[in-house]
Amino acid sequence: MQRTIWEPLDPRQAGLAEARLALHHAVQAVASVGQCYGERAADDGQQALTLGAGGLWLGAPVAGGKLRAGLDPVALELFLCDGAGVALASLPLAGRTVVQGLAFLAGELERRGQDGWLSLPQHPGDFPRHPLGEGARFEADGEPARAVLARLFANTGALLTALGAPDAAPRLWPHHFDLALTLHGGGLAYALGFSPGEGPSGRPYWYATPSPRPAPWSLPAIAGGGRWRTEGWFGAELPLDALAHDGGGQRGQVIAFLCSALSLVLAPRAPDAHAS
Image 1 (cartoon, rainbow, N blue to C red):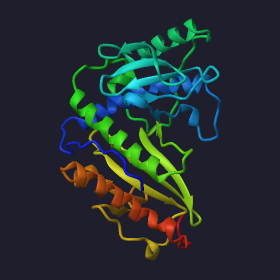
Image 2 (spheres, helix red, strand yellow):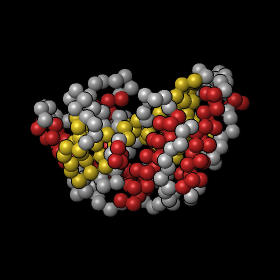
Image 3 (cartoon, rainbow, N blue to C red):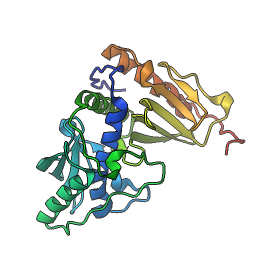
Image 4 (cartoon, helix red, strand yellow):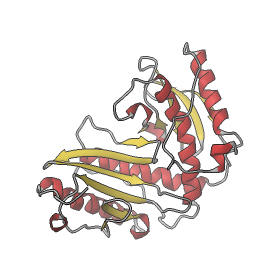
């Protein structure tokens, strides 16, 4: 793996769950632009975001590649950008609602020749409930926790980019709010990624999920403090709480976890005939 930059972070940072819920709702406004104006994809990739320069999370290009929405996850600020991700207009979300953020993007799109109609993506019933989804306003506090989450996404994005094909960028999905890259090899599709957690108080974790499900005897040992998980979903998991406190150790630990899980791809094994 080529050398990648890893920004050290404090895995003990308080407030990550609430910051994650706020960002999960904020990215829905960005995803709405791709959903309403982007080219439809079989995997709903028109909703997905990518990690842009300067820390922005960028939505799918629209208007012939000339426009895209964006979010600064630390400042909690919405953007309409040009196709290269350069900001054209911005709106701080603190003190505003998701609907007001949507109206801002719709207005900026209309000023640039689009019809100015936006609606939020429709997700299944497991989308997290939160007052922000019912008209509450975003709060300005929580920036330290948002900064840690943004750093986790950025660090993971750099590692996944180094692992993947040159033209394969990790994508941030607005439904489950995870950053993922799918690799193929040895008859397996392997989703590698990072989730900032689930539920009201869930903690962040890295994951690697092979499909089809391998036979139990074929599973490699997981390095870096990770483990195989079989309850709720199947795959390898490295909880943030197991992360070292020093930056160099953190990077090496996550790389060891991902590479040990990927040994299934590097050394193909039989799928489990009894898996559903």
